[in-house]
Image (cartoon, rainbow, N blue to C red; front, top):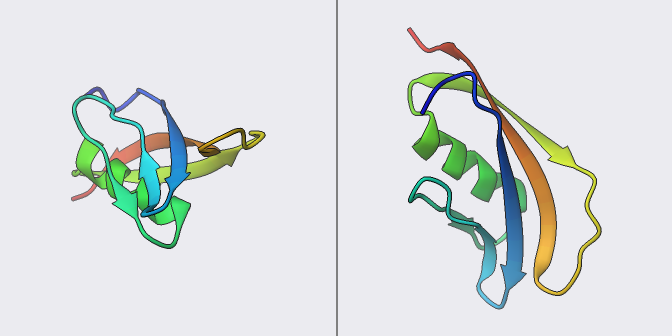
Length: 77
């Protein structure tokens, strides 16, 4: 995936925890923290790059919990 690509991530909450939607065939989850689920997904999508994770405004509806942006940065050396 190109490093100049900002990725929008939706996180859903169900009985087993926080789960990201599938992006480029990858998804992640965490039982207790939505941000950790997004961080795990960011590590899968951009393993060799620094990442910035930003929570976006979102009104929880149904299982939808939150919306996030993953912004890849410079390569890790």
